[in-house]
Image (tube, rainbow over all chains, first blue to last red; front, side, top):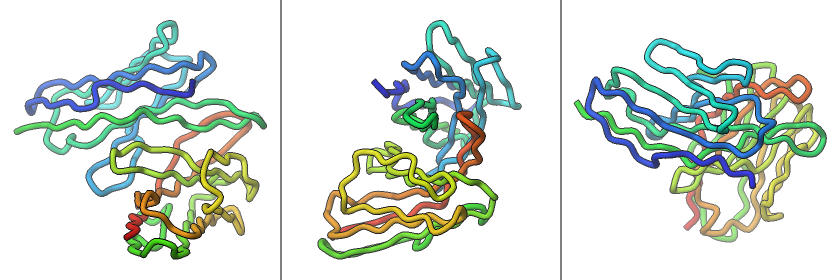
Length: 115
Length: 115
């Protein structure tokens, strides 16, 4: 199917702890894996993405790892802060007729960081 | 931040009415999208246009009709509104090159409430 499975659906951590969100995709041809952050009442915004030619990418406190064999990728947030509280979405492209891609989004993870 | 803008931001209307949402992007992208985000935060693509050509047309009721007058604009017209149409509708845009997938930039969203 087209599903991108995302876990957990909710995650509660203490400030300073790490948070990990995992997604599994089904299309072995997928080659681009973005993560979006959506704060309450705001638009989704890209925070990090990875392409299939690398296994890991870091940007300050956030990192994404990709395991193409297992078809899963994960978002890692270290030293969490209250402002990290948001809904996080993973996504994976699915090719369809005409050679175009559409992004299939996971169901989202609501992260709450408690001071 | 007016890279992708939508109007109106809020729309409250009664069942059976017809309404339109407008979207504009000034990023020079040639691909635009409409997404629906329901109360459970699930992001589902509805339509996509590439250079004014409809390339994605998901299983959406015929009451929804997109229109792209040029590459920078994508509008969504909804006829005979129903209670189940209540959601946040996001416009997005991205660049495109062949079958590669790139970051999508989302608009601020239009919260539609049908009473």
